[in-house]
Length: 173
Image (cartoon, rainbow, N blue to C red; front, side):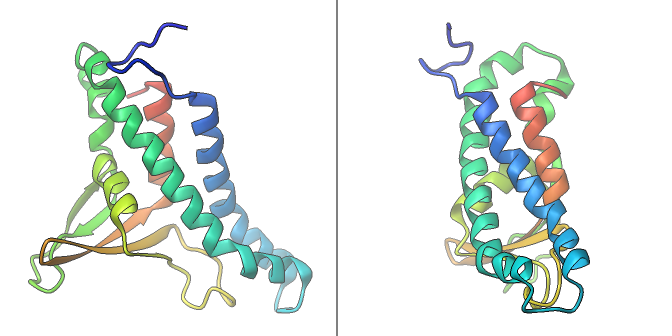
C-alpha cells in the first residue's frame, strides 16, 4: 500500500474507527445499563460499569484524539486539493470552549481540531453525569487544563466528536 498523505506511513483507518465506535458504544450504552439495573446499585452490571466507566471513556478519548490529530495532519495536503467541505473537517463543531475561565472571556465553538488538542492536553477529563454511580453519562465530557497562565474548560459533545472522527477517517465532508 502506497501512503497517500505527507508522511511515509498511513494510519489503519479500520483500527481507528473501531476505537471511535467503542467510544460511541460506551456513551450510548451507559443509559441502557441504568435502564437494565433500575435502582439496584449492587447489580453486577452496575458494579462493573462503576468500576470501568470513567477509565474507559478517558482511555478511548485520548487514543482517538491522538489518531485523529495524526490523520488531520497526514491528510492536510491531500484534502487541500479537495472540495471545501472535505477541508472543513477540522472545523466541525464538537462543543464549547471557555479559553480563559479566570479572565471570564466568554465561550466559543470548540472545533474538531481543537477538541483533539484539548483532550490530549487536558489535566482533568470528567464525564458529565453528576454522581457517576447514580446517573448515566449525558452527551458531554468536561475537559479542563491550562495554556500558559490561562485556565480553560471545554465541553466536548461526544456524538459530534464521533461524527467528526468518522468523517476524518472516511474522508467525508
